Length: 110
Image (cartoon, rainbow, N blue to C red):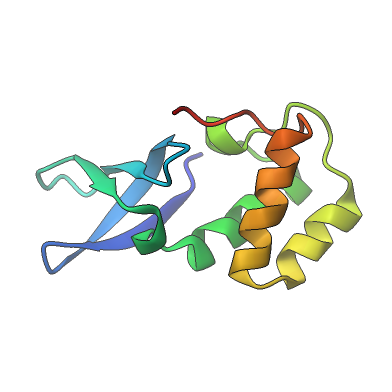
C-alpha cells in the first residue's frame, strides 16, 4: 500500500507518492498518474502536509505500511500520535523533528 496525496504541478493536479524527504525541506515525489514528468521536486512549504500527515498517523495506529521516512524505528507512544493529530501543522512538524532527534523516526538526508 502506498500513501498518496495530490499536488498542483504546472497547473495540473497530480496524484503522487513521497519518495525522498530532505533535511533542507525539499520533497521528491513520484507521480503515479502516468503523466510526465514522473519525479517532481517540491519545496517543503508547497507540499500538502496537512493532507498527507493525517494518513501517516492513521497508518501508525493501524500498523499499516508507511513511506520509509516515516517508518518508526521504535514504537511511538499513542499519546504522542494523538497529540500530533490535534496540533497545528507547525507544531506537528516540530514534534516530528523531535521524534527524529529522539530516534523514533529515521533521519532525513542532507
